[in-house]
Image 1 (cartoon, helix red, strand yellow):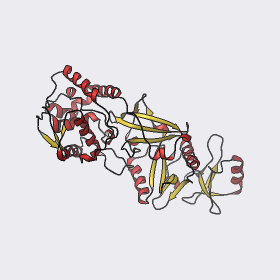
Image 2: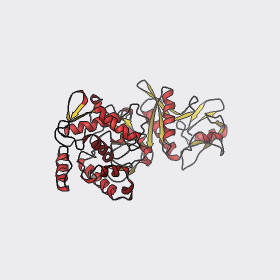
Image 3: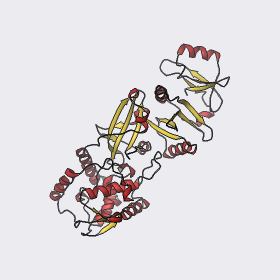
Image 4: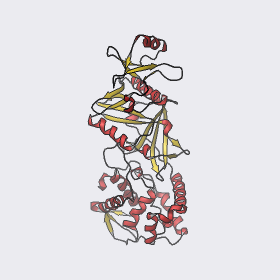
Length: 403
């Protein structure tokens, strides 16, 4: 902890008194108490770690709050100092008895109160949601920031992201999803944006890294991000995904592949508009190749020119797959609205732009030409090349007109 209570009830913050000579003198003169449980705490001063307060071993208070590493303490101290430099009068380690939660840093901005949770260790989805809802019950705005050491980069644009990472996702005013992080070791903010999952654990993304002193509060709360990963990068990753997927041992027991084969659908010859990158792809846990294939076989495969279906049919198709546990939605505790309709609208919009569908009145979609399977890889490769030449990421598409 970076704060404690003195015998007279005054709160002391080592961030404001970060002077070893002063703190050594104070340690001889004063007793320190935990702000939450009231127990005596020890002021620890050393050369390797920043000054901090700690409970005695075996303290019951430790059961309520996860142990804090040097990385965590230094991170919240830097965030506190950064907010001070922005003249926002932040508070360190504010405890809310009504919800039994302690925010790392609290500050007010544009009429709202934000509670920073600088999270460096993995916690369960249930705990993440519980803390988020706790703050929201008090009309506070939780601001989760991931410890930068938890970002695992495979190459320039490829990252390993677990379910834990996706819990941090926020949404910009232009519906872009992004993950905010901070690394006290480099003293830099890190933003992962334009996240395009290829599989459950692997995603393409753009990374934006800025020194702390070059980031404004508005950059953190309402950022804007430019380019998406390149189409060529996506095609290469999707090609590798399919290769691995089709030769893995699981193929003999895969309900997904069994269904395709029962319908006489060759998964290697699915049209190029199955498995495309979209801004809202993180909404569904499974690879875009899988969930877009389900839409293809439910609503497109074998359809004749002039046939139609509605956006409600698309939504119902996916919801049925979810109820059967064939698809799973990711949890985004920081985003209040459901993003599934946006993901489906983006996909339909892309199919319309590509000429696969024609949009009529009342959110009805028409088939402009018979949808027939490809007879061989030659035809497929030519069609894929043609499709991606005209394909563009739908960067600022607002799909609410579709639902």
